[in-house]
Length: 377
Ligand SMILES: NC(=O)c1ccc[n+]([C@@H]2O[C@H](COP(=O)([O-])OP(=O)(O)OC[C@H]3O[C@@H](n4cnc5c(N)ncnc54)[C@H](O)[C@@H]3O)[C@@H](O)[C@H]2O)c1
Image (cartoon, rainbow, N blue to C red; front, top):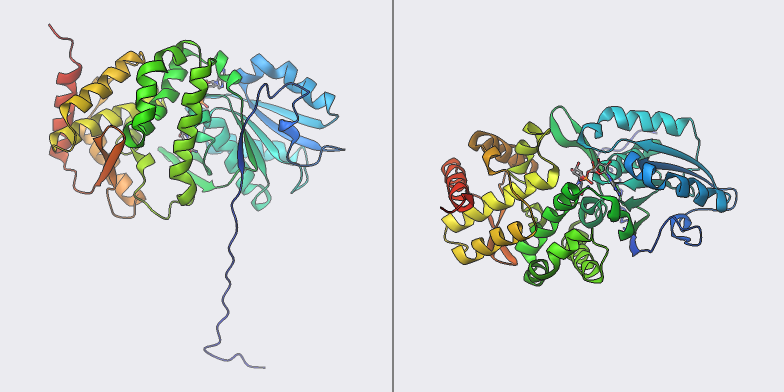
C-alpha cells in the first residue's frame, strides 16, 4: 500500500504533575514512615544519595532506619559544594546505580542534601532509564526554601551554571527543619538570601517577619516556633510563583529576582561567592537600579539594606563588576528567549519587569551601592 500524502497523525497528551511537600519531624526516626512513604517497603530497595556532611552527622541513624524497616539500602555519600555539581558526579552516580539495580517505578531514589546534591540527583533520576522516581530531603536552608521546592535539576557545564539539566518533578519532598541545626552560619545566611528575595519581590508581610524575627531565626538555625512560620511562608510564596509555571512557559518570573547578574559573578568568583551571596549582590544592584529609575523610594531601599545588616549579612559589594554583570545579562537574554525580563522592586513586596537596562545603569548601580554601604564618618 502506498502512503497517502497529506495524511497527518497527531500525538497529544496532558500529564498531571502532582507532588506533596510535607513538614516532618525527625525524618530519620525509625518510627517516622515518611522516608519510605513512596514505593514498596516489603522486599524493597533504595538507592540513597546523601551529602557527606549530613552523613557524618546522621549516617548511623540512616543505616539503622533502613535496617529497622528491612529495606536494603545502598547509601552513597557525596561531597557538597558547587565544585561537585558536575557531569562527573552525575556519571559516577549513574554507574553506582548500575551497580545496585532498582525497580524502575516503585523503588525511588532518595536524595538527602543541599541544593547541589538534590540538583544532581534530580538530574540522575530524570535521565536514568529515561526517568525513575525520586524523593528529596533538603538539608540546607537553600534547599529547604528553594532548590527542593520546584522541579528543576541540573549540573554546571562548560563554565556555566546549570547549563545541562531537566524538569523532573519529585515524587515527594520531606521537610525536616531539625536538619538545619548543624548548618554553618555562612550557609544559613546563604539560604536567607533567597528568603530575602521573596520578601522584597512579593511578600511585604514576610519582609516584616524577617525584620522582627529573622535574626533570632538565624541564631537558632531555624529551630524556634517563629522560624517555622518564616520557613512555611517562604515555601508557600515560592510555590505560588513556581506551581502555575512549573515548566517556565512564562519567562517573566518574579523568582528570577536576583538571578540575572548573579550568574557571571558566581561563576567568576566561585571560590568566594556562594549562590545566595551572589543572588544578594544582584538583589542590591537591582534595588539600586530601581531607585535610579525612580521606581523605588530611597526609604524602601534603606529598609532593604537595614534588613540585610540586621540578618548579619555583609554583601561583597567590591566584587560587583560592570563587564561581568553585562555579560551575564546577555546570557540571560538568550535564556529568556530574547528579552531581559529583569524583575525590579517597585515597593517592598512588589515588582515590575524591565527590558531596557543599559550598561550605564549597571555602572551607576555599583556607584550607588558603594555609597550606600560605605561606613559613615
Ligand atoms: N533547582 C533549583 O530550583 C535551585 C534553586 C536554588 C538553588 N539551586 C542550587 O542550589 C545550589 C546551592 O545549594 P546549597 O547552598 O544547599 O549548597 P550545597 O548543597 O553545596 O550545601 C552547602 C554546604 O552545606 C553542607 N551541608 C549540607 N547539609 C548540611 C547540614 N544539614 N549540616 C551541615 N552541613 C550541611 C554541604 O556539604 C555543603 O558543604 C546551587 O548549585 C544552586 O544552583 C537550585
